[in-house]
Length: 322
Image (cartoon, rainbow, N blue to C red; front, side, top):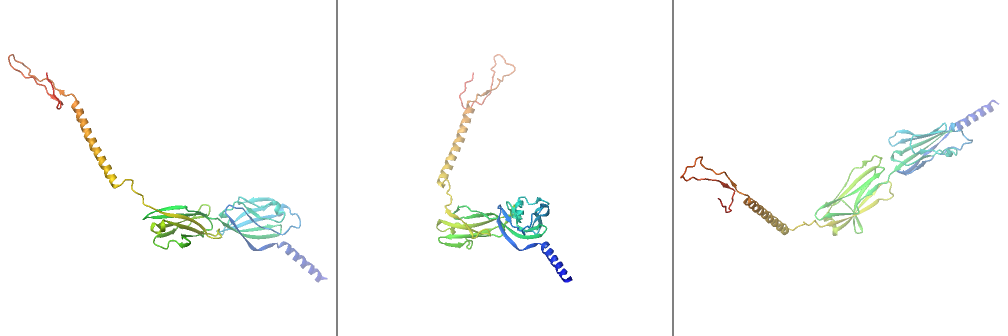
């Protein structure tokens, strides 16, 4: 009899342990999402045997980001939701269906990390999801470019707004049906800068190729900027057509410049002579100046006396004096 009672106690203890121990998911889900999209992180717990009061249900969503820093994203406790990450929510009606999935709207690079869901009903249930955020690069390359004969031309390929940082850029020369790696000859150089970190967490990079005109066979060549990134299932290619143009011709020939110089000099000399003649004519037309008559203080009778006046500025004109 005592043995039977001990068996009953052990069974009760086992039932209590099984009921209160809860459960957890042994695997971590992997999710990938593009920047700006919405994503749902699943968290399904054991079906409720009866309707649970809101005050007895607790939901916790936490995240450990790429810097190993843990933070609270969303909590539901005492029948109220507490949102720490704007744009995150758990549907209350879905909670009654044992679904505590977290919805994240307008995902950014900063949302990447390891998310953990913890449910208390009071049975404890946990589940983890690894969220990977991706941003597809934007590639900008001109369609056409021209290099002057005997000179060099640098063409820039701008790649912006990508995540993660790992990215490869390759320049190719399209020669008919053949594709040749660029930058291997002295007539072409490839320079790719270090990636820069943008304010939104994404990255940008610039890559340029410098081509000498003598490397452009037949006066025209196609160059390809090839980009490899995790967001592409295959390398992304964009091309530019490079043509050779003749050096600019001077507006005037040497003979024309000599003629223009001679005419200009002649006009300047003529203008100087004309100005001098006009000045001379003006001075000649100016009236002369006449001084006062100079005479002795005493004039004697029967004695010849000279009276004198001075005339200045008369030029070469004929004068009559009375």
